[in-house]
Length: 198
Image 1 (cartoon, rainbow, N blue to C red):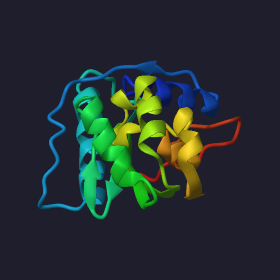
Image 2: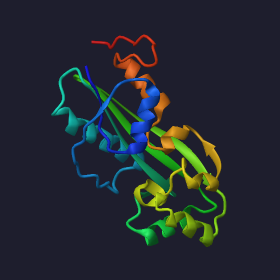
Image 3: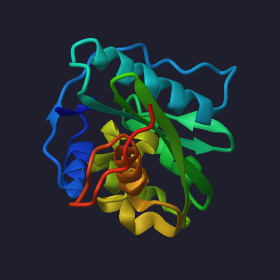
């Protein structure tokens, strides 16, 4: 049995290391366009399932595949990764002084079994000045992240309140993932796995 992370995200790879399991990385490209006809919760769940399904074609029957999709949602509208610095400025101005949600859809597959969960974390930003937003953008950190910020980096200075899983904001809710792995018969941190029902 191999554990496969279906993500190129360096942040997810670091967080996987917290689980105390050996894993490899394998990805397949899928269309990540979100439908406006479904809720952000439904869409991150769907995309995580499709990412896992795409990788499962190249994996063996007993391999464990972990896939995730993370978005920032403000007033019901999804914020993906910024197209450029101007887009990052627009996003951070919108988030300034407001509360938003970070959603991660996560799917774990093993053989014919698949579990999907959606984790939600609520984040409040203090009021930001244009000068500090621009200084942050100049670091380059926001350009590859949903919502144009990384809570584990300079944007930690923007967060006045957080409710939910901190690691979800980085793209992988590790507590939820550990329980999902155990449910599919994968022991985590030396614990005995729950035997999957047949």
